[in-house]
Image (tube, rainbow, N blue to C red):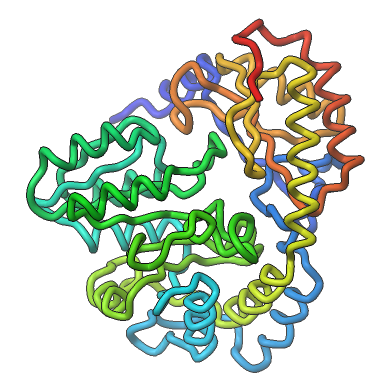
Length: 392
């Protein structure tokens, strides 16, 4: 029998052991975690909508009409009119022909990628893609080629040397680095090399683009440029679930082929109604995005002044590079002792030697919150080993 206890102990020895925190109350910057009041800078609730009063009200109002559970898969009797309305709303929001609602972002990536490629096909995946994309590629049984992160020239060479059905998959905004994929160039090389481009915009929807419509529209690209758009609803949208958007033909095909859609119970329909309301808030939320941009700029300026190594990100994801696992954990613990919750990210989530603190900002934060975090970082900075000079 496999020695599970030994493997756990080995993870502890190299700083890779993971634990869960018990959070009380709603998701917001002021959290109670493991009984302690902390100011959180590690949530993906980028617009502060996870505890938005109008979204909560929309959910409460929907429950008497829809009931609680989805009760069956979408293809049995679980496809409620609320799900259908959300799909139409998501298609309009992303400026696409149609959309399909999934239960989670992980299930969307697993289902879509494995449906669009199979044995004999080739998938080209950015080297820093999310685990759900990687697992979707593996599940497809297609040949997988990883191209260097954001390297369009390398991808283009790989595409030219490959025949048959080709799929290119990338995050829109990379979850651990916070940078945005070179979508215009990716669209060009896919068009020129007859490859289908899939973009997972989990961290761009709600934050980037006109009225928060995401990184694809921020790049000025259409459904023809990026045929497959995937997004999650549990981050900036503040609710739960995920979607894929594209042509009506593609959505019909996925209903037939995406196993994670076919063989799972539908999400509670009341959640779909709350999500529709949240999309309305996002469209009217330029003031939220403007405030968020101000927080990002102030944090970057302050962290740079303190000598932290920043990454090239203009999104709410602002990683502070540390390097080794124990130093990243030490910095996270030091901040927690001062009342701040900022999670240390370690391998295999990030490459070996690139452990970091993943600071995430939300429109629910105040400028005063950011100033407090910078003060705390100034006290903790001297405990870190010296790395390369910070960059802006």
